[in-house]
Image (cartoon, rainbow, N blue to C red; front, side, top):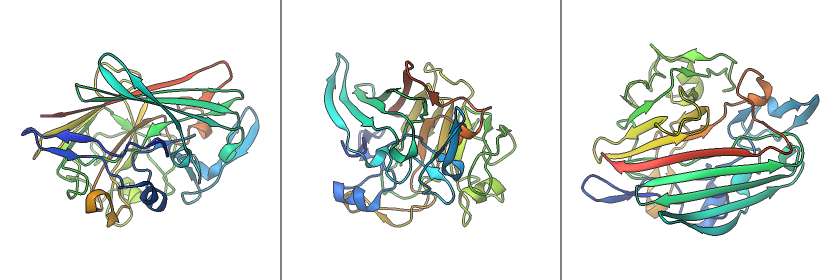
Length: 323
């Protein structure tokens, strides 16, 4: 969709050839306007959270709309997920897709610089959905883009994802405080419920008595964490893999980004979705390839600063197949 650069549906066969739509979403534009949960959307200028809705760049403080407790999240109250993108068909020898373009004016949502963004979605016959991002600016700014698709490999609205098996190639996470802002540490996942270095069911430890899980979802526990990838920038091997053992449907994520936000749709409960289905608590997960949350306020984190004359580039690939 040109509204928000939204991926509305991803239809994937299981090991028997039965096709299901594995991406959460809605039937029409009005539903997206009324029930927005970033389903399938491009998010920016800054994906994830910025503490206190403010950051300082080159000695100047910039203030952003606060829309997540005390924080600014996903670009503010009217981020890229709520903008109309220009679209152009893209066709190659082995794939087809769309190029989406948006010019974000200087000062939009408090961010400095006029930003020109192009995102190309390409799908090939091997089941790879490739997202190529590029952007330039006329003033120093910060930028962190991602796609916010929610996946349920059994089929969107087909129950919870707790039995689906996840693997994430990350030995560390950026632990969060009570406002879900990184503390600045890079904490090992070994011996914690956040460890997916060996494949594990998403629900195996989601209810564990762990302070990080309780901060992500105070009532029942959940995942909403930035994983520090072991091989940032490496597209030759997956950064994460999730499989539905019943259908065999599998998604692998490859990315040039240093982080991956793994989120288990903790606050979606009884949300009416496509085709008359309802999306439940823990009914999906995300694999949001991006830079770390609150990086503009954390000099030790990988930089998200973009300056005139530079080009922001990112590639993320979601590969779907049946195992």
